[in-house]
Length: 326
Image (cartoon, rainbow, N blue to C red; front, side, top):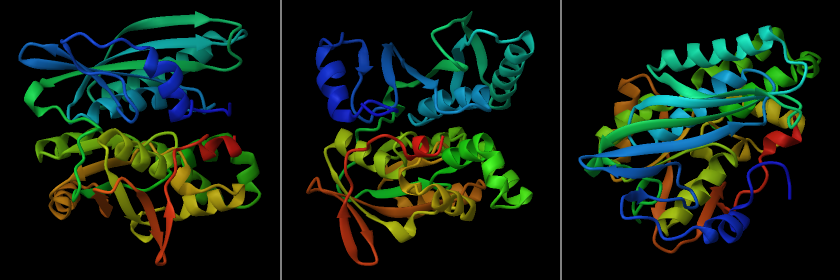
């Protein structure tokens, strides 16, 4: 298999099919496209999500915080805390570890999230830092938003721009190569996209507006997230390529490496299915968050990307485009 997330068909066959029927206290169990699990705590639901950072060499601590907290936000809830496991390679110095912990704490506290515990280890099993974070949140059960409740006729809203996380990772990890092609200002702007990858604010705003489904856009990019939310919800999608925002720096970097920005890891984007798309876009704009209606959910279960009038199928996501560059 290729580097990256295990393909969804393999995940279903080898992982999900081995899981037993969950206990009645499990409100949301593992599934294709689901960002979180939820457990019944009487009046409240406890929301849980876990993610590793494996595709980046820089800013690993910052990414680890945002990726798991973004998943919690996709349920329409503010994350409360994080458990963090740090696996460091042999030869790691105290200064290296100190830098990772500074990133983790500074980033978590910037979104009012506490570090609840974890594990720190030097191991020959890795050749660079691997950080795994598990985020937790709580909300009233009746307010819970999942990835699997989109319905035909829903507007599909995307926040920010495609490929933000991937652009930032490539700009950090391939900086010397990019310096031969682009200005320092260009590269610094691309690296700065890492400051835009939290979706906690838009998740909370969308949750308050009563949206039907949300999905944090990560590996597989925007097209992968569209396929996953459609698969989870049992709907189709029709999406217009020209409506999907892509920053200039993302376009240029992707062009250099021959990668598709719509299939590039895109933390910082939230995909939202709702009945009130234009109203949601306006409310997000009022809170300083750019968003666009990029398409609709349909009832025929086909997943279609429309570009200049031509329709192509949106297929199951494969290995993320990031790995072509790093």
